[in-house]
Amino acid sequence: MTTKTLPASSRSLNQPDPTERARRLGTAVALVAMPAIFVFAFATHPGLGSMQLLEPAELILRARGNPLLQFAHALVTLNTALLVVVAWHLQSLLRAGRGAWAGLAGGAMAVLGACLLAADKGAMCLTMSALDAVDDATFTAMIPGLTAIFAKQGWVVLVWGMVLLPVGVAIQAAGLLRSGMWPKWQAAALFAGSLLIAAPDGMEILNLAAALALLVALAPEAARLVRSPSMATPGPRTSRCRECRFRLAATATQKAS
Image (tube, rainbow, N blue to C red):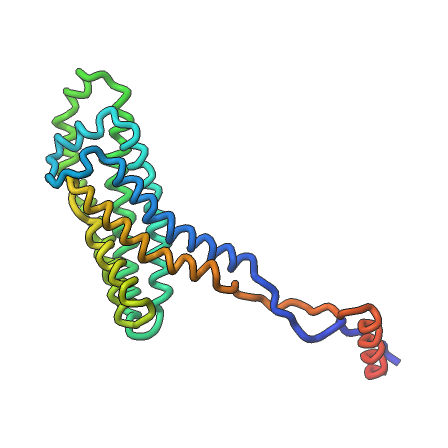
């Protein structure tokens, strides 16, 4: 006679997946933190109410000895990682249906643009913080070289590809509007914010308004992710009492004999 024992129950119980919950919470944080960082960064710019285009030399002098502005630029450099998360999440919302191609093409453009935005901030903003360590005479002698960088001469012209970021997100916003996945006001806020945030230097008041529009558009999606139940993985269900486990094991032994 053979004896065979079975687990306490062959049924499974859905248990919360901590990895999926962490992914949802992390994405929700990125959806809110990304525009919030832009709000802070644009709000710290001097002459915020001005609507005047700035020349390269003016941009150089504006950053000279301005640690708060340089800190904001450093945050924007790090913020490019969150931009990739946001673009990837929007693409995941549009994997199928009428907006699928908009999600894919817009996401690819946004990710490439985010990488080039990081290059722009690294080349033209973070370097300015290092130059605060040199004296005024040395800095004045370096201005012609810095002007060439800020004018995007040579291979620095590649950083103009950062405009792919707002265009890509705008395409994704159009896809969300076309597919009906988001309310019209929410998709419209994302569309307007993504385009206005590309306003040139000297018009940071427009950039600030765009960042606020992005926050309004993305905050409801972040709230939805937080409220939604996490994906679940099957797990063994334990019996309610010890007697039940003994009965199940005895039944299995009798059938096997």
